[in-house]
Image: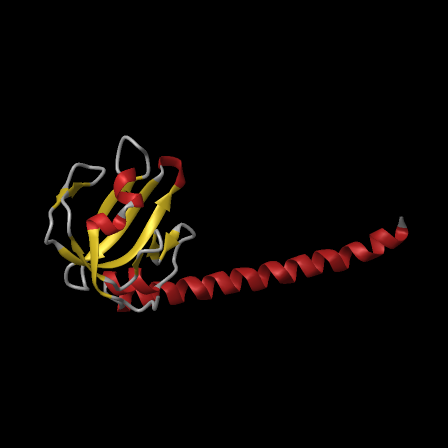
Length: 147
């Protein structure tokens, strides 16, 4: 019992040092991320910075960050907005929200401003689009990811 009591202060010191280093790292990282976000356009930030666990730079292994894309078949997104054949945009990234099976695709027409396309991976909504991207989107020019 006395051995445990004599080791206990060292355990607390280790935990304390670890927490101080962790807090310093998070603080520095957050400052750097904020500075990066302020210096980049919304499109550049979303297409290059991993700022969330549910963020991906590819969608269904077809669309990749930076791809210049053309809509080839009309479709309605989750909120009923129609995306017509001929519409062109740059794909930045996608966020997945598991609770709603929802995908938020961040796109840009000018590589500066960001807009969103909302899709839901459920049979009664946009599952057809999510799993048949080649029917709806044509990649005009590949982005930064090589396939």
